[in-house]
Image (cartoon, rainbow, N blue to C red; front, side):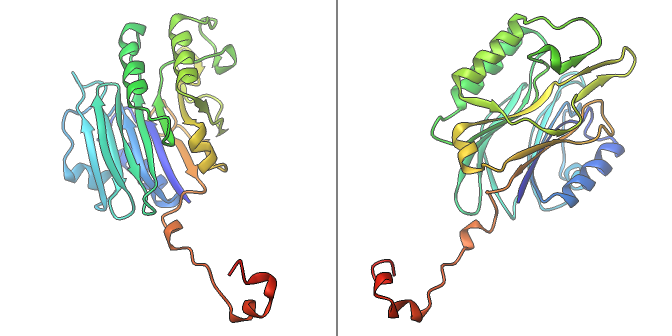
Length: 259
C-alpha cells in the first residue's frame, strides 16, 4: 500500500516537526510527502536527512519573509517525481510508480485573499490533465459549508468558497472524505476549529484506486493536522504480479482457448 502525506507543518526545521514526520513515515509506508509553510528560504541535503532520511529526493519553493514555503519529498528508490510547475501557492508534478503508472499530483498552500487565490485556480486548471489520475492536497485556507467550521464568525458562502467549488466542478475533482479528527486546524486562543486541509481526486484516480482513504492525524508540532492518503491499489510491487500456468489445464478442452 502506497501512502502520501500532506501537512502544513508551520516550520520545517523544528525538532518537533522532524520527530513527528519521521514517526509517520516509518510506520505508514509513505512514498511522498508534501509540506507547506516550511518557513525557510533554503533546504539542504542535511535538512532533508533530518526530516525523512537519506533515501529521499526533494524540491523546494522558498518562503518569503519567513512565511509560506513549500517542500515535496519522495522516495527515490521507489518512485519518481517530475516537476511540472512550481510557484508560491503550489508545486505540481507527475508521480511515476514502478509499474510506469503516472499520476498528476499537486501540493497546495492557497493564498488568503481571493485575488491571490485566483492565480492558484488558474495554474491548477492548466496543469490538470483530464486523462491522468489526479491528486490535489494541502491547505486550501477555505471551508465550503457551515458544518466544516466551529466557533468564530458564522460561515458565509463567499466569493472564495464559490470559486473553489467552481474549480472542483470544472476539473472533476472530488473530496475523498476522511477518518479521524473532524477539523484540521484550530486557533486555541479564540476557540475556532475549521476543516481547511483536504485531499481531492478526479474520477480517473478514484477508478484506479477505489479503496483510497484519507486519515486526519493528530495535531502535533503544528496547529494543522497531517493528512495521510492511502492508495490501496497502487503498490510498488504491482508490476511483479505473475500468472501461473499448470499443464493439467491442457487436459480440459474447454480451457484450450483461454490458455
